[in-house]
Amino acid sequence: MKTPLEKNGIGIFGGTFDPIHNGHIQSAKMVSDWLGLANVLFIPAHIPPHKTQAHTIPHASATQRATMVSLACQPFPQFICDKRELTRSGHSYSVDTLKALKAEYPEQTLYFIIGMDSLLTFTQWHQYQDILTLCHLVVNTRPNYDISQVNQATKTLLENHQVDSVTILKQQKNGAIIFAPPVHFDISSTQIRANLCQQQCCKSSLSPLILDFINKNQLYR
Ligand code: ATP
Image (cartoon, rainbow, N blue to C red; front, side):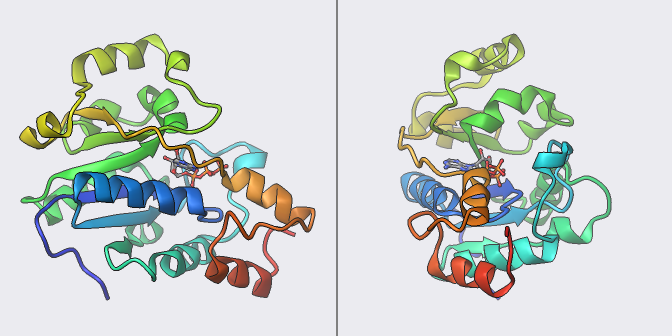
């Protein structure tokens, strides 16, 4: 099993991954290269707290989603599928996961990688202020989600925490928010599920390993 070894910092990429797609992988790779991270941990959520409406409840089982994440990580030595949330009962709160990771890797700086859509709701997350005492936030741009859409609480958060350069980011152990270079990966799991349901091709959005797993297990039909 791959385990984090070096001390250049660890990227944390949480999600439902229903299914994991090239937007997840490519944006994580871009951030990992940009910040020179030792590893990125992909952490599939067991019960995502924000996905409770009928159309957002995961379609594939937690085990299937985790298997797809492991498959997607295989070609990248620095990517690791971390299944800790699957063994925890109840909601998968990021703050609990980050506390556990900080206790496990006290010497490492943690970089929590999220998309712009997640930043727009960040101030509604469970104990969001505590999250910034444990890690930095690295925000990726996403088509259709724009910084102009943030609420007042997030504006205040950015005024207090945003940094503009990697040099300043690296001087702190936690508490900074930085925007990654604006590269757009116009892919979402919702769109992929809709395409698969209509038997449309998803080859450009999914790794062949994932597509194969989806077909073999008759997912998203
Ligand atoms: P869904 O469409 O089902 O809501 P999703 O494609 O947004 O799924 P999630 O698993 O919910 O995928 O996302 C996990 C994390 O990855 C979130 O922080 C999200 O913002 C980010 N993310 C998802 N897709 C992209 C993308 N194309 N580019 C950058 N970040 C992304």
